[in-house]
Length: 208
Length: 208
DNA sequence: GTAATGTTTGGACAGTTGCCCAAGTCGATC
DNA sequence: GATCGACTTGGGCAACTGTCCAAACATTAC
Image (cartoon, rainbow over all chains, first blue to last red; front, side, top):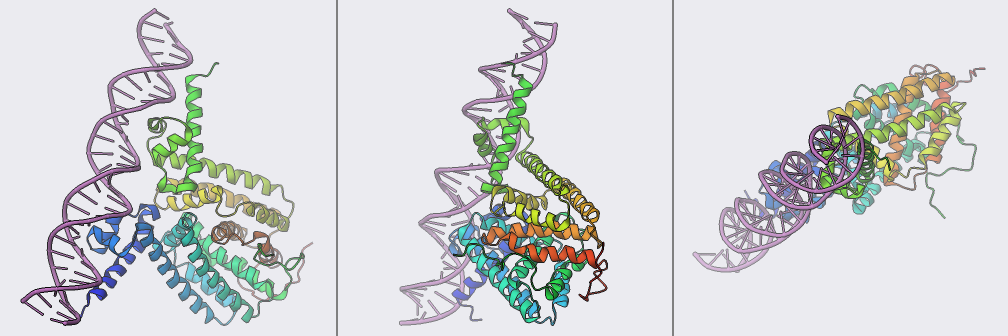
């Protein structure tokens, strides 16, 4: 087998990232230690600082990689849904696969919090989520949504995360039960293009 | 000065709780140390373990106390709002006072996450939030909401937290801009009592 | 006065942390 | 063969952690 050193190094690096992704939900962002990650990845403790400058660097890389995969998959699937109501149903169905206390949900939440203390992480995660929101917004308009698609997409994305958040505390909370009000939001928007009586509302506030 | 020993102890204990409430958002739930809290409270390091069995105990007590005050205040103010639309507006207005990266928001989020690893905290925080949701649900029905008030309240509470979450990443996200879709969600529920079966939007049945 | 009670102090303890580094392994290249 | 470079090892270090404790302190009861 022609396993070059470089190739071997890449797989080791990936194993470290995977170990970090698994550990953050278990012990929390700040609870992950170099020795933990190394043991989980099956390598010597010192190897962590060969591939990453610091533990934080490792966590940031691991978290962003995971989020990118998750959002891309979600956006791709959503794009395949023919109409809005069906898309919402599918999203909530997808959401019910996450208990709110499962590793994927927890990792995302941990990233949100860590990003408030890590400017670089906030910047890069913000770009990822902004991209997802834009995809959802264009999907909404393409499917005939008449209101402020930007605002609706922002609210939809926020609601999804909020539901996930609340499920962490109340596992009995069934996302499917929330389909009614959530669909009402968008179907109402389709027939009532002007939801707010005030000026044309934009999601962004800080614009000259 | 008639400062009894017991009274002095109580104020010291409160100072420790206040210090913990201030520190969790700054350094994260897991980043708070005994010496940090003691220094912030202006007492000797050892005093923490006189008033609390462990650092975790201190954090749980501090977090629950803060959450109780916040939710009680919110519920009381909401009860005073005469109609649903106005209440939603007020809630979002209130929410815009929180940047999503402010101490109050961060403490709540940190508690959510910590609760996934601390059964006792999850139990007690779940009770508090369940109570708040019940208050909102009865407020909705009392104001004429015809759909599933429980589901609507759950979704509303989740949306609020989700918006807070997203604002942490995108400070430019203006809650007021989300008023339109969010109002649509509940006003639509007022005219369409059965949301699941009838997705059609031709609802003109106005209730007197 | 003395004794009892509740609170505070500052240091001690063992364990853990992130980060570093000299020595080592192993395949690719000469 | 020898040499090179990428990668890995396991231990070392100073700094920090939660928890504990004997002693000091202040306040109240006798």
